[in-house]
Image (cartoon, rainbow, N blue to C red; front, side, top):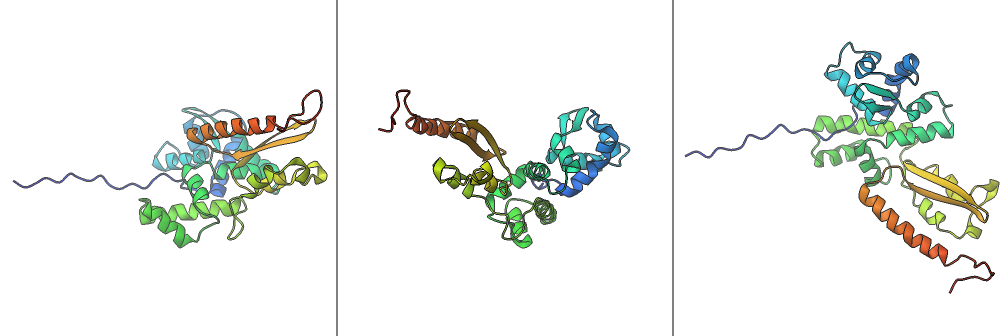
Length: 251
C-alpha cells in the first residue's frame, strides 16, 4: 500500500512591516489632518489611507502603521498615538521628535530582534541571508531588509554609527563624584540619547539626581530579572546610607 505523505502547508514568512517608518508617517499624515486626536473606525482609517473598503491592501497598510505604534486602540475605537503626532509635528531635529522616532522604530518585534543581533547596521546581503535562515522567503527577506535599513537610517543609524550603547550601563554605575556634571547633566544621560530604544526615568534626591536607563521594550522574564537586580542594587545602596547620628555605615 502506498504511503501517503502529509500535505505541507505553504511556507509563510514571519511578520514584518510592509512600510518603512518614514512611509508609514507619510501614510498617516492625512489622518492627522482630518482627525487630529479624534477617534475613528478602521473603515475611516482605510479611507484616509486611500482605500474605499477594508480590502487586503488596506489591511496590510493599517497593519504596517500599527506595527510602529502610530495607531492605538482596537476595533473601531482607534486614534493616532502621541508618538505619531510628535513625529509629524515636532521640529525635525528636536529631542522630542528623535525620541518618538526611536520608540516607533523599535515597536516591530522583528526590528527589536535585529537591533539586538547586529552591532551596527548590517549590509543588505548580510541581513537578507540572516532573514532567509530564519524562514523568510527570498522575496520577503528582500522587502524586510529594505524596510529595516530605511527605517533605521531615518532615526540616525548608519554604518559605523548605529551601535548598541554599552556606555550607558558603564557610566551609570560610576560613583557620583566621578560623573560629568557640566550643565547639571550627568554624562551618561547625554550618551543615552544616542541609544535607540532606551528610556530613562530621572528623579532628584537632595544629594543629587538618580537616573535609571532601561530598554523601551521588555519581556516578562526580563522584567523579573530587572526586579531582582534592582533589589540587589538597593541593598548595596543601603550600605552607604549615613546613619542619623553621623558616620558612614559602610562596614
